[in-house]
Length: 233
Image (cartoon, rainbow, N blue to C red; front, side):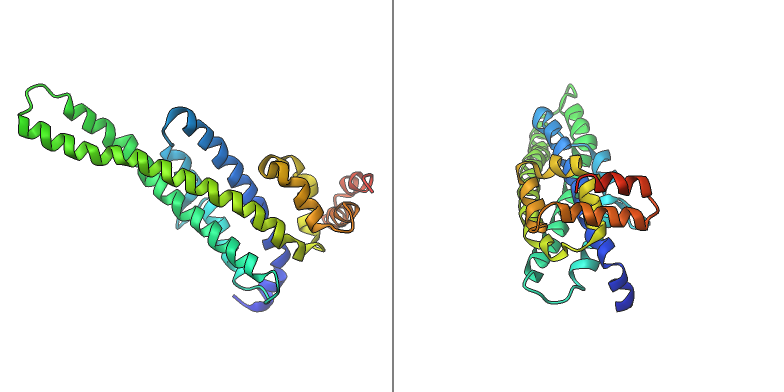
């Protein structure tokens, strides 16, 4: 990929990384809330989120966009935060791969082993070997617990990193438009840190966000929507 193309897409990459992170963090937390209640995770949930090489899911696309953004930025005092974010988002991707595999085992192998253990007439040796093998399957639940805990930990620190990194892009109209248009999503993910995020980016005041958002909407031909954004000025 040429440097000129990467530079032309830079503002889009910044917006896309934050947008996709918010969507993924929201979906993961909702799913993990179900896990807290049931003790199981869904193979199909992670399969959809990850996708595959020829049909990438949202999380895979986020990882790729993250690499394009953070590994091609100019060196600045904020660069280390971008490096941390790139690592953290990639870490979430790979932990979700593990969760997908663990969910598959729980969905397919665990019921089969339970069924085998209930077969009448097993010899003591068959019962003993089966019990030892089933103990390994039970460990999958422990792995899932650790993976969920790690992902939650990384997501929390991603929020802090975005607050530290995004001030570098305070003049990005696409970022401002996203923050303006998707305020419910952003607040739902960042929760008590949402206002800190906005104020960290727009140190001059939120009027700067609304101005840039209106500019982006006008550039896209959304004149009425731009006028609505300007009402907040």
